[in-house]
Image 1 (spheres, one colour):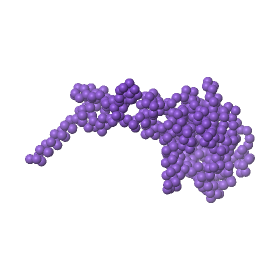
Image 2 (image 1 turned 135 degrees about the vertical axis):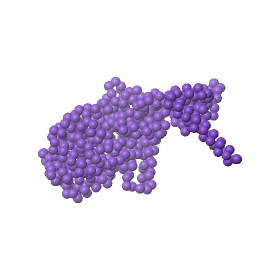
Image 3 (image 1 turned 60 degrees about the vertical axis):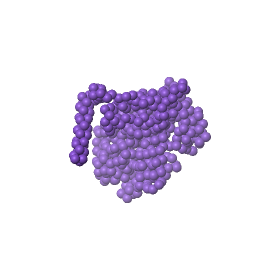
Image 4 (image 1 turned 30 degrees about the vertical axis):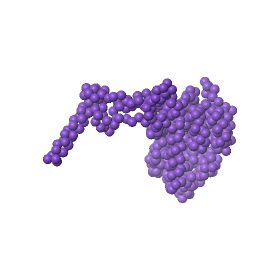
Length: 502
């Protein structure tokens, strides 16, 4: 869905004539477009597309499976809307041994390689952006070249959430009411959009619905998809557990319904527009916190009141914008109360629908893809990946490390280098780069290619001025107190030594 709408938006860009190819490395390719090319490609096709392109937008594990992409000198945008490492941890939870370790290591390596190579990155939320900025910092991509040109780092990574169609949903054909046996025209229909995966919690929802049904027999819960649309992906354990629990509680087929297949993307609006509210539930985990649930956006598109568990970015939006109710994870009583409240309070449900119609305007694909479209309209290599020395900044930093001074300007030891010492080291690195680059004129840089830092001030007046400039009077007083303590400690040690000799 995401790749399709990205291709569509770039192909429709009015001010730039982008030629767009949408590639899948899967053998399943049944869609086509009049506005861009849609291709199922093997290794040769991927290599040909890399040679053809000026800019590549990649996601998932495709660059790992096809090294020609990751090794390309073309401009690369990595779409990291899915934190692979957190998803893999959630997906393999309960497993043990080398297989799980390999999967986790592979996901970490794949994501790190993307962050190291990307000329530009897009993620799905500000929370995700905070996560990835931390990872970029750890990998050295927050460096003088990326930071000085843009201290916000938005030129390196920006937010492109999942979006919604520009047009409002239209009901085209009956889908649930009067179609699914057991769901009538006047029932309270709760829809669970999307699949049932192991990091979701349908069990708490089924328990809550069973309780609601005891005093509100019109309640119906419909799971829109139990089988992943990719036929190569088998059903997950949670899908089996959900069916088993519904059978155990006696609500399967009368209050809880499972779609064995998958609702087509183009038909989902028929199901959503017949629903009373949208529901989703998940566990308290790092995967939840940094996730972006596309199914929740569909609820927004259909202007449905939402009941969801707390913890992810969409729950935060629900709370802030009055789109529904949020409950603690794995709390069937709280979930039951929230469902009853919205189903019983028509005015509240109407307010949620009105707010949803307003908020969904922020998530139109035409708008949310703005940062990516702007980058593709003026594509550029990341400044730290293309430097005068002909190799990325990280390679340069590794080959020519600048040892920062470990002492205070007065010659005394310190846990951290002074601000001036760090600045001098940075200046030395710049000078060294120029010296190495200019070696053709007969000059030669030092072994490290870095000019030694200039001498540091030593007089008390110079030291006082330095510390006052760095931190004001407080720092001057603090440094003076520290120096006094060191002098007294040294004197005391000398006295103790003299006593021992005598």
